[in-house]
Image (cartoon, rainbow, N blue to C red; front, top):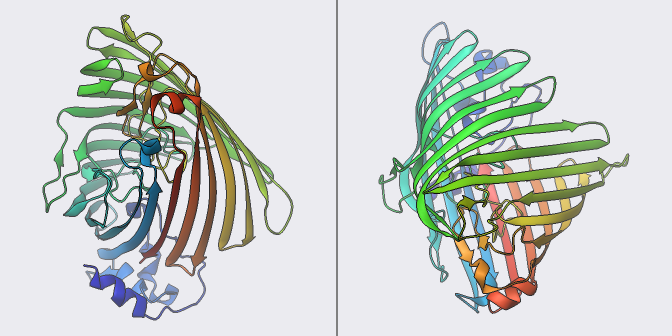
Amino acid sequence: MRALFLLLVLVPILSHAEVLWPGYKLLRQDEDFSYLRDSSKKSDYFDGIKFISLNEERSNFLTLGGEVRERYEYFSNFLWGAPLNEGDGYILSRVMVHGDLHISDKFRLFTQLKSNLVFDKTLPPRGIDKDKLDLHQLFIDGDFDHFLLRVGRQEINYGSGRLISVREGPNVRQSFDAVKLNYKDQNLNIDGLYSHPVETNPEEFDDKSGTDRALFGAYANFVKLKADIYYLGYDRQEAEFDSGTDHEMRHSVGTRWYNKGKNWDYDYEGVYQFGQFGNKSIKAWTVSTNTGYTFNHPWKPRLELKASAASGDDNPNDDTLGTFNALFPKGAFFNEAAILGPANFMDLHPGFSIDPSDVMTFKVDWDFLWRQSIEDGLYNVPLNPIVPGSAGDSRYIGSQLALSGQYKLGKHWLLFAQYVHFYAGSFLEEATPGKDIDYFTTWVTYKF
């Protein structure tokens, strides 16, 4: 499949008017090329495979597409020097192709294959790195006026991706075996779902539905209010926290408020969690804010301040679990290094960005982190404990300085690079070798 990348590089791209072009979405199934029923609307070389008519009335059609992403990552002193003091650089390769079959405007079959490979990696392997070849999505849609029923393997992404995300940053994206019923009108978009997350396995066609975990609930978006409200239930047979391993039945109720004006923008979210962890009661929470101001300048300079917190466990020996569970968050939660996950933390995260042109962005941000509870440890993004709380008494974790740049080349190409320096704080100096981490990544993505 890697030969596909070389083929795409050699394909000439036509540059015409792009008025109707929908753009490539985070979820490729959200793209709508039905406007190409009118062949005069074609503006790109690949429009020939975006609307392949299957009947004389042109009501049935097939859309083909995909992406290739080649990414380099480098770590030094991974996990502050605990498992590996040396530097480790490696390649992560992702290829995804999809087909989207529309039968009239009522029924649809969408399928997507993935191939994710890793080369020259010395660090311990992660499940998000490798999946040689597998079925990533295969679902059927039935459209009944305002209601859409979707059944099968599918990607799910809600809000800003703080709790339910496709996990775009890592090499292998997240999908779910799910039944989802959607209602949509001008003012309301609401999903009801029941699902099992798909477990990533490294060989060919061996991914399976994670029946030991279930995600269910309802997520509503109020369009005019620019607000979300949701309930999510999560049942996990073997949940591991700093205080032990047991069965987890967790309920999350949350709300999100967001807006983007000419200058000011904001995105605020709060979640409360309750339920059972073995014989313990769950009482956990998170609050996240992101406030930005864009100046009236051609380069669109933007100042932002993020301030967030997620609860930790105050006492591993009592009858309450206080550690917040972010469920299935975006992989690059704080930055692309993805060293820490959003549990038992407080942070202040200022940033500044500029857009010298419509296709170029540069950003610098600095994230300062503390433990919310000094009795609980640190967790990675999948919520696995990585540093026990008992290893130190300090609250201050450290800080992460990140420098990023992005360049879009036409419709299809995206170049990205980021450097992160993690300054180990007093808790990490107590609990680990306490070495600063250097991280660098760069990738090129080609979508068609």
